Length: 168
Image (cartoon, rainbow, N blue to C red; front, side, top):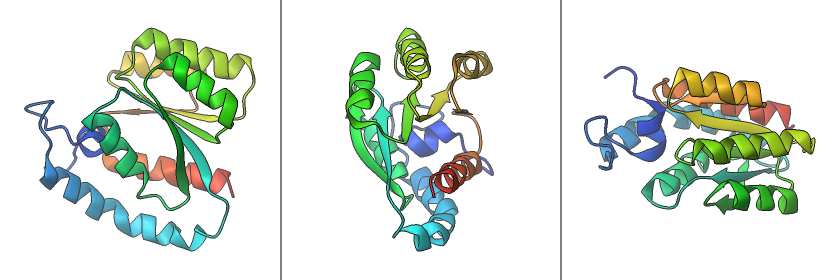
């Protein structure tokens, strides 16, 4: 396969069976972005970008944490199981980035984005969505970036580069 869905790379899910881990796909993802991550490693001495992950517990969330750990400037400062706990964490920690998985209930994501924007918290909101309709809805609600699970991994790498450059 030339392109793998972001969902597979981030969550280790196999296209045929959403619950199976695919080590081969994970290895290909790592190989495809390690060079870019290493290129950014000269920025390691810069301040870390505090990051909160909002995702349901389990293998999906663990794979997301592992993937984000490939980016040297990102530091995962907290993980939340749902929208309310993510909002509480964001209010306490004031991270520069929140990564939200569409595995949360759509209402939780909607509430979280609305509250962050209403309170004018200076946080870059990156959401992983399943559908184009979700992408449009999340962008309308104020998400700063939305990546579809079906998009090539390169999109995630470029998004992380953008976020890293914004936080220099």
